Amino acid sequence: MEPTQGIMYTVDIQEVPPVHRTRHKTILKDVRALDAADVDNRPVNLIFLDAHLVEPQMAMFDRLDEAGLISDAIVLAFHDTHLWPYPAADWAVKTPEGFMHRSAERDMVTIFKQRGWDAFMLHPTFGAMKAGGLAFRHGMVVMQRYRELKTSWE
Ligand SMILES: C[S@@+](CC[C@H](N)C(=O)[O-])C[C@H]1O[C@@H](n2cnc3c(N)ncnc32)[C@H](O)[C@@H]1O
Image 1 (tube, protein in one colour):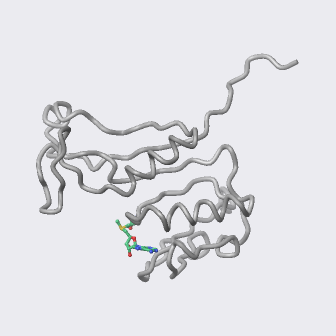
Image 2 (spheres, helix red, strand yellow; image 1 turned 120 degrees about the vertical axis):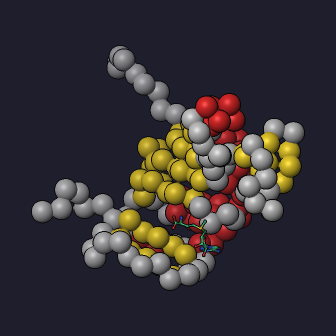
Image 3 (cartoon, helix red, strand yellow; image 1 turned 135 degrees about the vertical axis):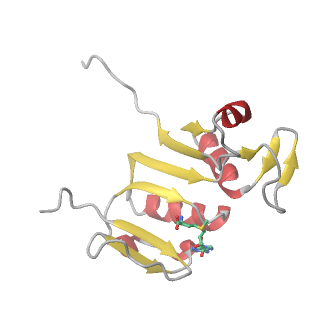
């Protein structure tokens, strides 16, 4: 018996092998063109954005939102949002705060923040990375719309 009826959908322009027979659907498509039918018109609870593209991923989010599939409780997760303490790849961009690995997901976090979302950043300081024996962390950001934590109701 399955514990939940949840389904994970992966959209990618490259073939992705499913990790589960019934609960993982892989969609071979440009994320920009993903629509409600692709996710079986089911409400979406979590979106992990990791294609390193701003406009196509924002278009996907806005299309699902217009279709009424994005609830107030949805969680957005972004990867590669942190800076590196040193240029661990030749495409890293030097900034006054460290070396930027990717810009797209950082820019998307800024867009959602401007739209009023809250962000929790899993970005250890460079000092903490060193103390923990870590060369670097790519970083993650988790976002959600704040909902009032009421303690009384009229
Ligand atoms: C950093 S990888 C993500 C890997 C994935 N999150 C995982 O953990 O396996 C970025 C992926 O985005 C895909 N991608 C790039 N442009 C895309 C687009 N326009 N639509 C959908 N997927 C795209 C690439 O094919 C690649 O597999």
